[in-house]
Amino acid sequence: MTSLAAGARVATADPGAHLVAKARWRWPEFLLWLFAIALIWLAPSRYLLFNEIAILALLALSIDLVLGFSGIVTLGQGAFYGLGAYTAGLMAKHGIGTFPWSDPLLGLLGAGLVAGFVGFLSSFLVLRGSDLTRLMVTLGVALIVQELGNKLDWITGGADGLQGVMPAPLLGLFDFDIFGRTAYLYSLSVLFVLFLLARALVNSPSGLSLRAIKGNVIRARAIGIPVERRLVVIYTIGAAYAGIAGALLAQTTQFVSLDVLSFEKSADALLIVVFGGVGTLYGALVGSIAFKAMYDVLASATPEYWSFWLGLALVLLVLFARGGIIGLLTALRDRLDRARSARA
Amino acid sequence: MLTILFDGIAYGLLLFILAVGLSITLGLMNFINLAHGAFAMAGGYITVIMVHRFGISFFWSLPAAFIITAVLGAFLERTLYVQLYDKSHLDQVLFSLGLIFMSVAAVDYFMGANQQIVNLPPSLDGRLQFFGASIGYYRLFVIILCSLLTIGLQLVLTKTRFGSRLRASVDDQRVARGLGIDVSRIFALTFAMGSGLAGLGGALGAPFFNIDPTFPLKFMIYFLIVIAVGGTTTITGPFFSALLLGVADVAGKYYVPAIGGFIIYTIMVAVLIFRPQGLFGRVTGR
Image (tube, rainbow over the protein chains, first blue to last red):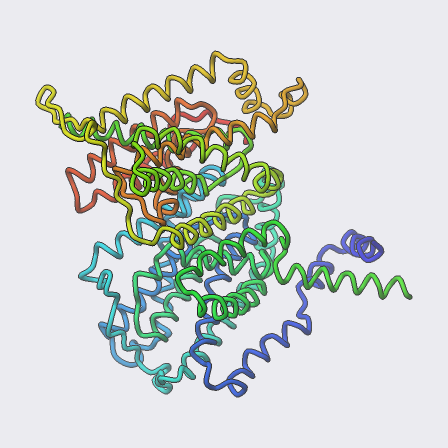
């Protein structure tokens, strides 16, 4: 209670300083990233798994931007993920350009641009209407893209998947090895850079106005926030992020299957965000680690009934643990703080 | 041509019966229940089990599908759904998605993942020639039954005391509560009815669709379109949007099979561009 009052006092005295303080880096953040880097030496045999986690985390991050910070409930982020995967996959397969124009980083850029462009176009549909309409549009767009991926099989390989994706060495120096060392380092670096950007974005004035929109659209409009423009921008950025995640998948696994476009992929990523904590950015990272761990334990026992456990996890989360892992941790920290201040 | 129109109408009416419960519960409690299709699937499997495992007549399986799914719906509403009415749409979406995944896996476990085919009773098999159109008896049966149900629903909504209470609650829940209407009881009843109708629709549709465990996921988009295009304030809106969707889908798949799957999405996008509040919806602040 006292800390809340103190916070409010600071906020009224100087809102700017209060917001800057809130955006400061804290020690658990450093710890998490150091741990991710340390994994290179700690568990050299599990690079492929870590690579998968990093890619999932980026996809989940894209959903967190759209859902957690802007309140757009989306069921179709998989569309952009898949678009990115196919774009980068095709660019690598047909070997567009020679060094330095064949670099995987340009594949990422291409995937981000394509997914972002489609996201930009569909954002105008998403803007219209209520949550229900948004569900329909995001799901509908995902189904259209999936149907296209299936029908345009002379480009995408259809149900057989896109084979023969051979990305050039990264920066002309690092080849993608079969142990996934380059892959993990590559995905982790991309995740880190994009995470920093997202972190800066949500703490910027534009990001704060998004939170205002999420809180109350009518009031946000009344204080002069250009609601439509902000939502278009964040939806486009979210789509580009998902596209880049897909591109990472295509380049590091050197294969793209129609699965990337499936509804389950979108649902998995949504679950990861909720699992970790909506609107926290770190929820996406922590959630994907927890999700993969859960998958490893449950799906290795009975792979065909994995979706049952997934569903059960969703139901239990909604009923009992709304804040996800990050929410639980924050609640724990607050309780510790209160206990300490009570003793003092 | 006439045949396609006929098939489309049969399909559209079926979609309406499947989705109308969702439309009313959404309008009433502003509750997004994506798992509505799971009730339809339950109805379909009840038919499969009754007809093929126990050899009971198809006609008896229809009321059974209605009653069993209605009871199931009432039970889930009282135990689980009731805890989510005051939560955000995100929570409701996640929760009902969770139910879908669980139902998909559970059905897979008990019934297997392959498609179940329901054989029609001999009295409904066969076709009828009518002004050059070839009309399947079963489709005629579906049209007649669904039309009767629709008329019945409309009468219940407009002529009975329950119907006027329901409409009052949809219009303004707080005022209705203030006037002494027990909104949560009405809601439980409506939810049960809606689930039952979905179950009946699933049973009726089983010979068309050849249901399998992924049914709730496959039909989620159809339900969403029917309701988003038709609006949730009346049942005439969803009725016409279901008919439109049914005819367009059947015609699209018949005339342009290569792109037939995209027709319904085109309709969705077109409606959103020109009438974002839905074809029949009124403009509200909600």
